[in-house]
Image 1 (cartoon, protein in one colour):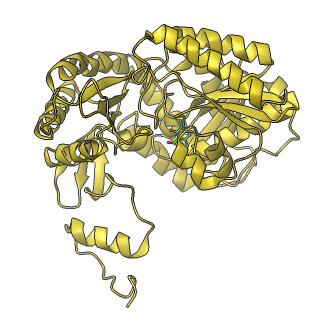
Image 2 (tube, helix red, strand yellow):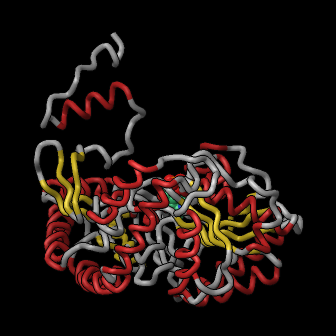
Length: 444
Ligand SMILES: Cc1ncc(COP(=O)(O)O)c(C=O)c1O
């Protein structure tokens, strides 16, 4: 009897039966994803199939910036669904409006938008644009970065596991060191380390490149890499490097845009202007959508139509996107993210001092990570504890992201921007309880 023969329809309210049904028929879930069977969600609260309620510190996966099922977004989706769902690449009334609004937030030199469906697809599109515009083919990316799971975006990933799975990687993919501030050698301060990593980056490029660098791709903070943020000097050096190579800079804001960091786009917080900007996740509050924001002089290097896809810029996604932008504006969610950031980060300093094994707690805006280690001196990663913290948090009624980072020892937090102050405090109390009750016997 195979798994499917054994499959029966799960009974309502039985998480175990839903999990068994998935195990019999679907590809397996990553560790840390499997404890709660989501049934519905509203704002920053999630309900599971057993009727239990959880505070959400995930936004799905940094998608529900406006909160889950915001009434304005739901209404726009329902109305559009009744009107027009797909017209392939034909013009419809919402596409240009989406582009106009996105360009308005991006400002500066940007004047063109390509609409796509997933994060990986918009990264692929940006790479295509960069290659066509520069007539070169090498792409520089950073260690511990994550840009998606397609073959080409995996080639750009600095996460060893992701790259290993797609080998051989796409020719011309050059990975250089990112200045991971937590794991820097003790003799360097953060700025010195960033400078040294950029010196090493230049050397790696000098050795490996054949003078064909089209673009450098970078996240404003390492997301899946574990919520690492580079200091300002890194961005100064990055601009200098790009100019020296005459290369474009692609900013992967798949996670970071739409107010999450306390700026509409995270690049605005770094004072760094990229050439191409890739956005997804929070763009349409859960309807699959992504975009490349750039310039006509770069896009026009490609023949017309080559960036279109079946669902790119479809009316449903555009309606959800416009409603999302309206909610971000009307509810002041960019400022709300700034305020909530102070609430979260305010707790971190004490946790690092008081709770054994909390090696670091960091992030940019409402994308945060807690790095768990054996002790502060060895910094040996404690991936097992990270899993236990996720499970303990769930027992306390809080959902956090499954462990991430290249050592799988970072518990990531990314709440919806509509989280109330009470839920922020209550969720942080629950997380603190989970951190305290998972302390093992190691030294501090
Ligand atoms: C920074 C970054 N880039 C790209 C992607 C890929 O997006 P998608 O899963 O929609 O393909 C992700 C997904 O998590 C991401 O975090």
